[in-house]
Image (cartoon, rainbow, N blue to C red; front, side, top):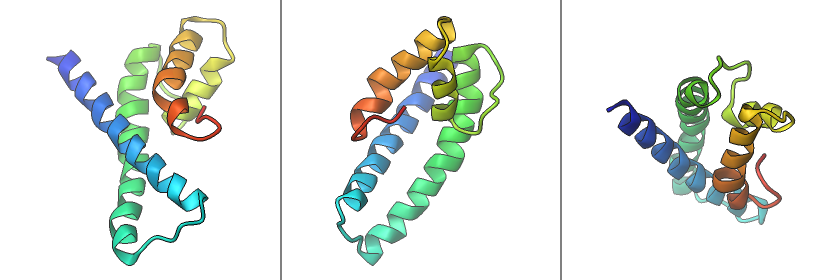
Length: 110
């Protein structure tokens, strides 16, 4: 049952990340947001960063994945630190960035 909750947490966080990257892409291309898009997009980005990234991915899932308590607020920052290491944590961080984060942001995420 715990594995199912971890999977669902990662799935929801990743879907939220993909939606946020689409909003960021639109902004980076100079496109303007309508009031309606801002009303839904900005709270979504804040909730995604504060709740899903910091709490679900970094504190809960990241602690399980990396077998350590976090030193950083965000999962990406934690991955960036571990990517410099030639340890199992570095391998996990590179895998997460290569398959789930970098392909969906121009120039890479990690």
